[in-house]
Length: 178
Image 1 (cartoon, one colour):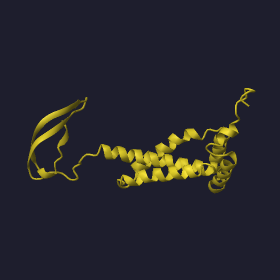
Image 2 (tube, rainbow, N blue to C red):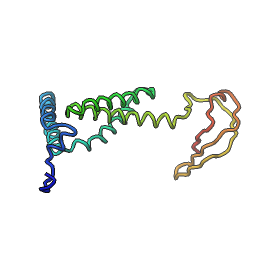
Image 3 (cartoon, one colour):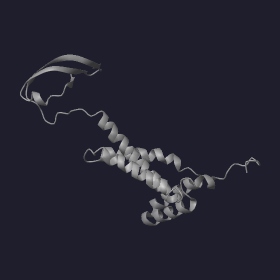
Image 4 (cartoon, rainbow, N blue to C red):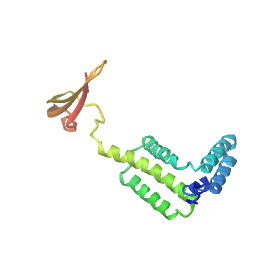
């Protein structure tokens, strides 16, 4: 084929992330379950599989994972999302001979990777937050940063001393809006 200068057909490229037959089966299932909206999405899925355009949906799945992190009711433990990425990655590796299963596992791995990335970022920038108001305290420190806007100034203070009730709960750095 390389000698004749022909490009490979879209069908051979579609086998990487799912076959037309598998996409058509999923499209039929979606169409049967969701009525008119399902038919629309089924046609769109079939068109994407026929044109071998399933791979660009991986960043969308990654973004969905990030959105799921922000929709979570509580902060997850860091090991849980990382384990799910590894698990779905292994499943994708094992199912690489089955195009439809590979595509689903890869999409789930991308969702888990987005969730893990958001969890990891939150763990890296974690800082203490006051959970309830503190009584009047006297603070001493120095200005570490200043951010001037049209409506207010915001300064970050690195504390060197805190006296008063609730002083033991004060973080080392505080942000004050003026």
